[in-house]
Amino acid sequence: MHEQSSCHISSFVVRCLPEKLGEVMGVVSALPGVEVHGSDPRGKFVALLELESERALIDTITEIELTQGVVNTSMVFHHAE
Image 1 (cartoon, one colour):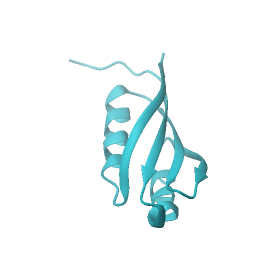
Image 2: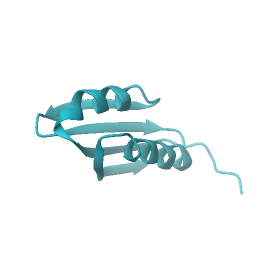
Image 3: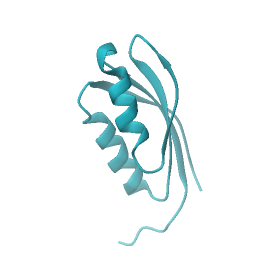
C-alpha cells in the first residue's frame, strides 16, 4: 500500500528527567521537522512536529520517546491535510 504525501502537524508535551532537560531538548530539536517551544525546569517542554507522512510522524514520536531521559510524551494536537 502506497501512502500519499500529506502534511501532519502535531504538538506534544514531552516530560523528561529535570536534570536531562537541556540535553533532551537539544536532541529533540535536532530531529527533522521538529521545533521545541517553551520549557519548565521541572522537566517539561512542548515539541511541534510538522512532517510529510503518518509514518514519519510515528517514527519521530518513537525516536523522541526512546531518547534517554524522556519519561513520556502526550499528544496535545494533531491535524493532517
